Length: 376
Image (cartoon, one colour):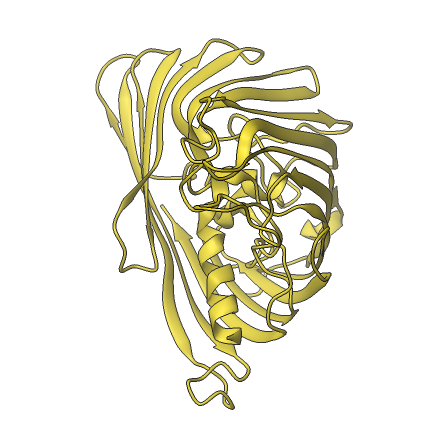
């Protein structure tokens, strides 16, 4: 059971955002038009206490956790297209991750339409490739990160308007959300994220985020809030209910001399679902977490290089408090070895606790993993 919960959390890593690769092949087509191609890979060895088939021994598993292909094209200086794919665990079908028609008019006003990230909290905007901790997804996520009824991989079909005005950043969108089941009236899901950068502006693309910029921007202090709501967003065709969720978060990066960087990230999340996992509706239910969750992460990039990269120890703690279930928590202690930013990274981590992606208490898991992340 421990092994199953840990691997489910690993799979959930892949359900959230991924920024475009920082590098890749670029083919010039005309004066303003071009196409670029990139790829991403995450693979890991994991060991879980009492996770072997015997039930009394440590499990030993190698998994390809994610394979992504990135395609970006520019038609004019203001119109482009993005197409990305995802394959989980290396043995499943290749799924569409993003298909976006991009109309980017200015820094203040842009419109995306297609299949894209629903505006949400930082860990969903980071995705697995741009977070500090290897196992970010041990707390409940928004509906578009569920089983496909309301989207997958944190994506959904819809439209997002985004931009920045000075140090204020916004993203507001409307999406399909739950399609069918509890949503027989065909209501849309509405999502928004706003952020205020007190010090340096973050420089992630569009409304995406990262959990460290390696001190390249100087000192950063960002406060942000996100919210999503949909009438008929929970329940079943027989018993329909509504969903509302919001998140408050803070992110800071302090750059010291010699390349040392301190990152602190914290978040409070609250979901209100008329039908939750703990008390499912009759029939084929799309039931969500109902309650509160919070986490905090601290990471310190050590000055100087060891070989080609830098070491970054980190500590992450998460606690989930469902309204209709027992509390759960999980602590992750890890070490990143950054070789080429987010394009080449090795991670070692140890986790202990009973929190998982559902938000409800699971098995008490002690697990160790070694992961490798590459992008081009």
